[in-house]
Each structure stands twice: as structure tokens, then as C-alpha cells.
Image 1 (cartoon, rainbow, N blue to C red):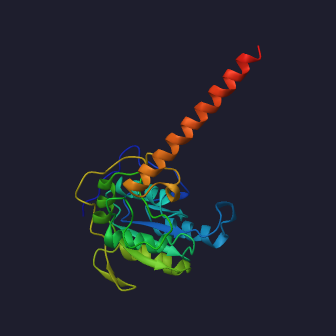
Image 2: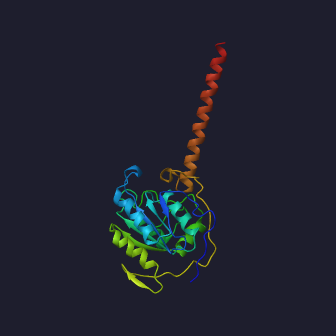
Length: 234
């Protein structure tokens, strides 16, 4: 079975995750529906259980945009990762789990929106489309949304390791070996830090540009007036 060593700068993105066995075929995302500093101990335990069971990476995910972009970057940088287990209680505000499933099924449109996502801002503005398509080709997403049992987590990770297919929650899982293409290594650009307010099409972007241009003209006019009034007072 083909396994490869990940590149020296793997994983390229920092985040709230643990690194495990680099040759493992599975990474784990545990949905985080709470504020980061209010993470319940049970959620932290699930992350540790995933690593102890043999996952390559395991961590929490809060958002359907920038956070997901980081996950994609780290996964495609390691061709050994062939599965992404999505675990834990769904986030009603961000629909993180549902969005990952939609990405796997449908990809993104020409506006970089994840097709079929129910999240409020499911846009992947900060990564190349090549990374998104590679992610969809490289990994199978395993739906464990709303699961919270450590034993189910262990079984999910264990199933991905097997040499011959085993049944798990409707999937036939086994380790197919490394994806047969070189790793894609890159970081998110941070060009867009708040996808929820980013213009979503050309017309909306033109309106935003006109508004910003008008605001700039008004600002300069006000500064010029103040400068002129200051000069008269001398």
C-alpha cells in the first residue's frame, strides 16, 4: 500500500487541532457550536480520542468559511488523508457539518459559494478552486453529525485503517493508500476576513465600490474645508 511522507511545512495552517499519525488515512473535524473559550470538556475529549485512535489530524471547527478553508489546506497537503470524519452536534448558526457534506457533493459555484449549503456565509474566498476540487477528489466525507460517543469515534477511525472494506454507518471503509498526486501546499490568503459582508456578485461589488468612492470624496472635501478654514484663521 502506497504511503508518502508529507512535506516539511505540513500542516500549513495553524488552528485548534492535534497532529497524530502522518500516514493515517483519516482526519477528524469535531463541530464546535460554542465560543472557543467555552469549549466543553466532552468536545475536547473527542479530539483526543480521535488522535489516540490513529487520526492524522483532529480538531474543532466553528465556521463554514475561513475555518473550513484551513481544514481544506491541511488535508490536501497530506495525500495519505483519504477520509474526513465530521463529528459532534451540528451548529445551528453556521450549519458547519451540513456545509461540509454539501461541499463534498456539489463543490462551489463561480462566486465561490458552496452549492447547497444552509450556512449564512458558505464562501471560500481565500483559497484557489484547485484546492477545493482536490479536496473533493482526495477525501470521502463520513457523516457522523450529531454523534457524541467516543466509542463511535474510535470505530470510525479504526474502520478507515482496514485493509479490506468494513461496514460503518452505511459506508464501506478501508485504507486505499495515498492519493496518487503530489501534495498541494498553500495557506489561505486572508484576502477576505469576513465573508458574510463580502459582495457576492459583480453588481453588488460595483455598488460597494461606488459607495466607497463617494465616501472617500466626502472625506477629502471635509478635510479640504477644514484646512481652508484653518488657513483663514491664521
